[in-house]
Amino acid sequence: MQGAEVRYEAGKWQVTKAMKEAYNTHGYIIVRDMISQEELRKVRAALEDPEGVQKYKFSRYDGNNRSNKMSLWNHPGHDITGVLARTQRIAGTMEQLMGGDETYHYHTKLIMKEAHTGGTFVWHQDYGYWYNNGCLFPDMGSVFIPIDDADKGNGCLQVLAGSHKMGRVDHGHIGEQFGADLERVEQAKKVCDHVYVEMKAGDVLFFHCNLLHTSDQNHSDRRRWVFIVAFNKRSNDPYLEHHHPRYTPMTKVDDSALLECDVVRDMEGKWFMVYEDDEHLHHNLH
Image (cartoon, rainbow, N blue to C red; front, side):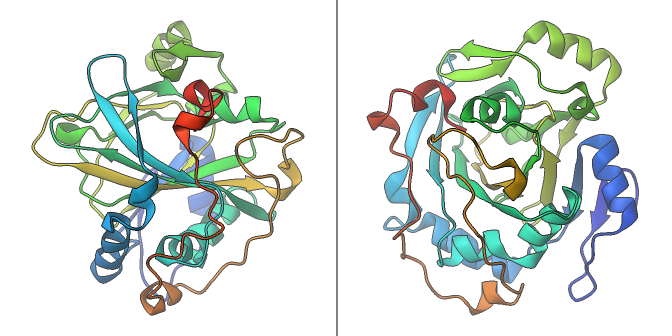
């Protein structure tokens, strides 16, 4: 293992002490080739199905003439997208990196940066949003799974390595987004490595909720879709009722369940966000 990067080996995968140390040091780890090409084709087809999660997509503008499309749901469900989120290699790995205590599915989102039109996401921490949802501790994290290759050309994720150690930074409204205090971000850039997280489809990034991250507009002729699963610890059950779920038990499944699952359109119980119907979501959805 070098730095914050490791390669996945099917049948041999386990979260090691070195991986935990890398996650705690950098605020993230990248696992190369964690989703096979066969699995990826299946997931991609499910996400592209117009009668699946695509029915619930909406746009968010970046304040600079570009927008991103997004679908967001609160419970994983039993379809292909839900099975992926609940596999041991996704949910189990995140749980181990977060310390081993029981975690639950906080929400999943599909972010679609389309070719030539995909917008920016300003510098932010996920906990900058989730703190306001009644989560007392930053015992939360996200799993970032590119559906397409992501590089500088089509607006890949950028992170400030180790910035999770700063704790929560104040956030404020920037257009239709909620971003971190830019003075703090500029100071953090002086002491934290600015990393462009270039990934192939099927690579997986696990990252801490206080890691500062951003992404640029997509000026390329290639789309950049990414599937992101957020997890929270059971012990960090929000004290407020809000637009994401409080503790809900989550059943993990074997990694083999992804290829075995053929359920594409079972959207029942996933609790999709409907952006236009909730003014609160316009500035706090994440």
